[in-house]
Length: 127
Image 1 (cartoon, rainbow, N blue to C red):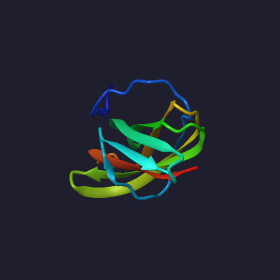
Image 2: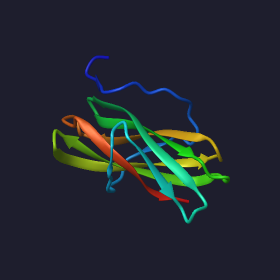
Image 3: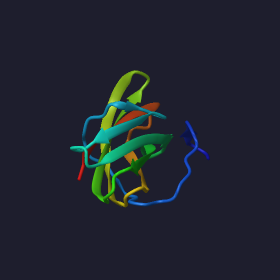
Image 4: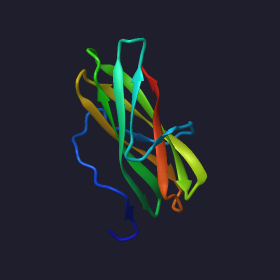
């Protein structure tokens, strides 16, 4: 993998897979997991899995487990990318149509962040 740095391995299928970049805040660290309760009706768990850089920027693979009894129509995962301890930018991705009991996978990419060394992520919206 010329020109790429890999922090960890990522495996899994693609339910609700999507890629996009937009500016939003974030809280969780790579390799960490977070839960979001939505009025007691949904249970979502975020896991960050793979952080990489390439000539286009930086990206991190994310997985959201839907522990609710109903499908999640859209879940937004937001990440802050850092070079060492210094934030270099933030981005987010939507994951669509995650069925009850299933996991949705995606990537959050920050274009141009070739100096990034890590990312911290959180679920910022779910519906």
